[in-house]
Image 1 (spheres, rainbow, N blue to C red):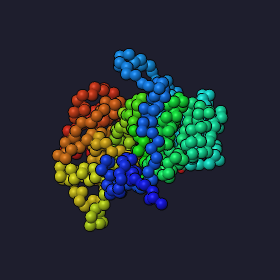
Image 2: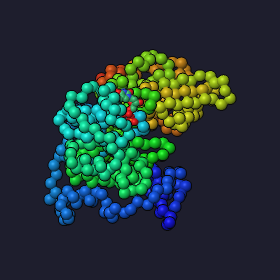
Image 3: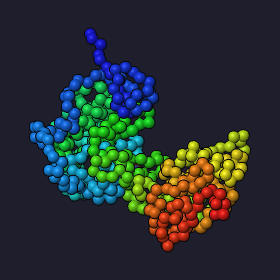
Image 4: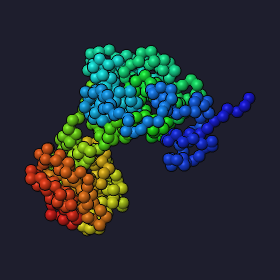
Length: 457
Ligand code: TYD
Ligand code: MG
């Protein structure tokens, strides 16, 4: 018997290689190659061009740019404002949307809630599940508000059957939960492998575009890369949304990383409750609820999620160490950055941090990685070290450089505006930003070097 032919695929980016490689030359991932049987070549043509040919007749003809008519894409509003905003103002009809995220983060819940609002508008929606039984979905639906209209479910993993049912029913919207469970019979690799994920998505793209069905695909991302990450299919779909959050907190952020029909700067904020996801219209208020007032080591910082300012509380606890090597812990932010900022404080202000343990925490379960939070971290450390609180009702943002200089940050104006909205009296910010902002409803304190912080805390 001839030996079955196999190829190797990178599970991160889908790069193909005839032999196993320790490191993917395309994306640089280590130990990411998996062996898969060679799939029969279905067609040399890419699914995208196939879909376009289908929609435009058999053969495409060259057209002058000026003769192409543009019209606004037809969009359906789900009524879940945070979701619509991330999509750029509603669901574009017959688009293909990938919703990625860690298992258990709430992707199925989010899409079930979207389905609910869509069926309530009288749309025909088909929810295809390959992961859970129909009873499990019913149980999840029971936790949400009761469905006023019928939602049609299908438990199926064979894409050939799904294709048939979609062609027959022609629903307005279909949800595939999840792409890692779907398979095509003509491909011998197992479901979740790179070739299955890529081929099933290609088939869904073709069906969606030719029949005018909007399709949402759920894709799991696993850190170990056990199943093919949705990154393999990012370039095939119109929109890629990532649903992020910490399993330990209820705060969830829906982020768009690719959008052919809108900006990728938008984020939607949700909170997971016992009755499903609730929209958080004012994330700052949500993040700051119950924060201590007038306590040393607690600083309110203005950060950004996409283009939206979000106020978060940065806490620091600096205390004398009992170990030979002081402990440094940072939760919700980059610990290397915290070490760097502590070194700046030691060198420029002469603080004796070498004898202190330092614990930094961004309260509320949010992760902030932008440099604009530097000044808040520095002031929280300083405030805890000196055991003195910051000026009352104040807010902080700014980047700190290695020489101790305080550098300007982007979108300072909208950060200050959010502070005004939430009733803050004082903003401590980089001097360059302070000079360019005119706002007489709030006191602005411009600082240009960490040496100047001594008089504030
Ligand atoms: P799920 O949508 O199944 O996640 P995913 O599809 O991304 O794997 O949600 C899983 C978690 O959400 C689960 O741990 C239970 C929790 N959850 C709630 O807290 N409240 C709810 O109303 C629902 C439906 C789920
Ligand atoms: Mg799920």
